[in-house]
Amino acid sequence: MYQLKQIPSETQIKKYLRRILFGKNVFCPNCKSRAIIRYENRYRCRKCRIKFTLISHTWLKGMKLPYQKFWVILWCWTTQIPVKQSVALCNLSEEAVRRWYDLFRSHLPINSEILERIVQLDEAYFKRISLLMGKQQGTRKLAYDIFFKKSVDKTNAVNFLEQYVKPRSKLRTDGSMIYLNIHKWWPVRHQKDIHNKWEFELTSEIEGVFGNLKTFIRRMYHHATPEKYHHATPEKMPEIVREFCFRFSSPEMFGNPLNYLEKSLTLVPFD
Ligand SMILES: [Zn+2]
Image (cartoon, rainbow, N blue to C red; front, top):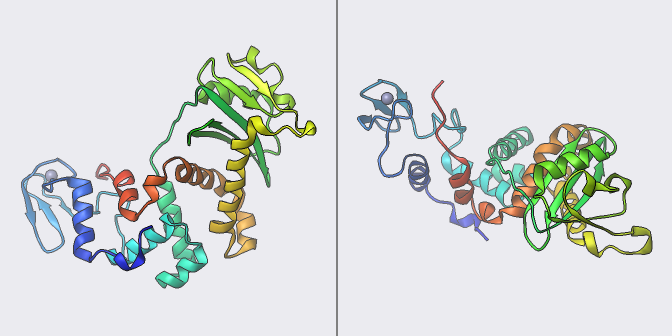
């Protein structure tokens, strides 16, 4: 695990950012010219004359924190330090920590997995939210859909298969009616558990994932202020589930702040 004592220096962090964003030589994020004049902490393009900094054309633009403090808050998020603990560690307000966590979460890259071979599919319910999630058996590949309603119906299940499950996969579910004759709607070989007979093996992996998801939500986002959490949940759930799936499927992204930045930080067009 990455250790807090090993926070890189300001200079080292800037070096990391420069390498991630520009490679060997800084270029103009607007016109790509390499005719750059460098000042202390700023750059100017000779060709299109814009001024820029290392982070002015990324989602970190306008950041007021010193790089080392930024690194610590990012470390807290990648290693799943609860919000309240990060507040104490970073000496930031709870609102600020939540804003940073939201920002990090929202810049996870797009993930569009297609599940194949053997797929376990199951539903989970939260307050006013339903979740359909599939796991490719024996792998860390997940796919999911979120619905702002109390239950999932057959149309939702069929849409899920169309989106995320490769034709002719083996589909394993519980005995819910929403999967009845599902193979007539999408070409899968369907096997189902009958839960009231104490058969859980077919969906044990996806049920394990749901257990982890509930722990994750409680640990990361429930801890500080339960009242707030309950209000925030339905709107925040899609993002939180997204974050959870990334942590589950791509644990290497969360090994330390640098891994996350390498995957999520890019130059965006000038506006
Ligand atoms: Zn330029």
